[in-house]
Length: 408
Image (cartoon, helix red, strand yellow):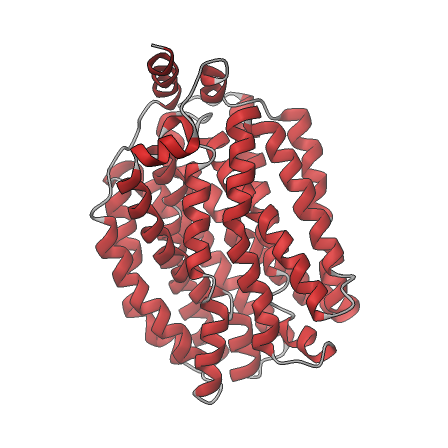
């Protein structure tokens, strides 16, 4: 399988785009306790910022997805990255909790746009047989961002404080220069560019069963990832009283597991199919639950976190390619991102809900995480068996047929 330089550049840009987007998102999960202390409030009130970020992501997926379907993936991706980087920096200047919550909501809109645009550009550009691996790599951007945030928290937090963490988050803006210099437009988008295409609502109406199913599936997926990640640093700090250095080390181990899981199951999906790869990955979570949520020492917790994220991000590693393959061609930049982020919206109650369950049970964050993680692992394994399998479709050829059918 031969790769062109352009295909490599697109893959690098999309991976880094999602990595740095996740990096900016996860910087906040490490400092919930500090923000609560400065603004004289409780952790669930600050965790609302995570909820709002997730809840606003569908708006970004819709706005940036429509721009990408109309004007191209490449320019939209550049604008998107610049906006989320700026909003991250501004979050560090927040004088009060309300301002921070507003800025995190706007950040959610920008964050919501990146994944759909970046994944469409990548899946439409890379060699067909490489899609499974690239899907795992692209989704590995999310734990890579978490890993990067863990390292920054462990190294820089003691010197810069919670505000400085947000200031560091402006760095992804530099990626815009790379995209501008090295990334070409998607060949599938160019095949449809000049041809009439049905609108978003008409296309969604024609595919309403697929749309509803995919939203339900992505709701379960988002509960799976956010339910096992977002309050994990708080679980380590509040329930186990570990210092920031230990928290950072365990979180690094967690994210190495996530990256391995995404790459392994993304690649496996080329051999056994998208559905079976997701089914197997999701069910690995069940035997891992006791070690992950209810052990006590840092080594045991790190091992549990590593194995849990192999499961979670293993299942997630197949999602970029699977959603792009089952997507209607004419709205590929909008559909996967919008479906993904609508699932995020429905799952956005997770952080607040888990924090409340934990506090009601004597600060038992492990119990709250296990309840969510175990339930949705079973739900995902059941739901994915009803999905379509479209491994290896030719997206450029399929896009040309859309244009021809629309103009006929």
